[in-house]
Image 1 (tube, rainbow, N blue to C red):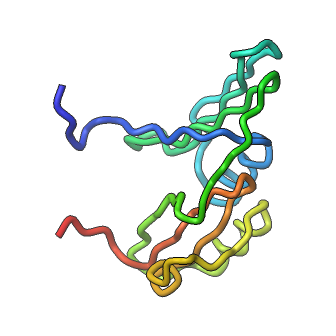
Image 2: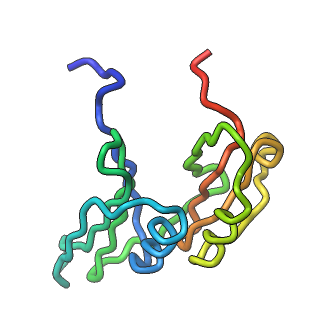
Image 3: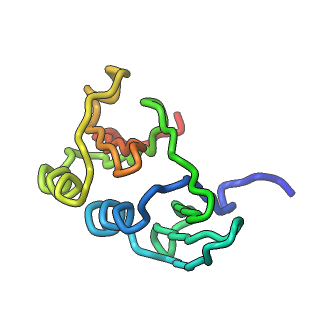
Length: 136
């Protein structure tokens, strides 16, 4: 099966607190909850939160297993970059901060020049880039 632009992409990450993650990604950033499942307390059973847009070819999947929680271990380079093709709205950054995000500087000067970086409650970084995506 060839990989092409029509394939769906899932970005999966552990979360220490799905409620805090939902506040940030849904309440702060504006993603929709596209699926939610509650697991049990036995090993291997986990709670699941999928966020994205119903019509998108991607989604962010966050999981938490109460019996064996996995501590998120993001680095400064674990980025989810969204190309806005324009200025980053101050009210969006404020809303992300009000919903548990933390604005941070990037170790990569490119992202500081061309966007705003915000850490989610698990420490993963969202970059709101002022540039447009280009395949060129």
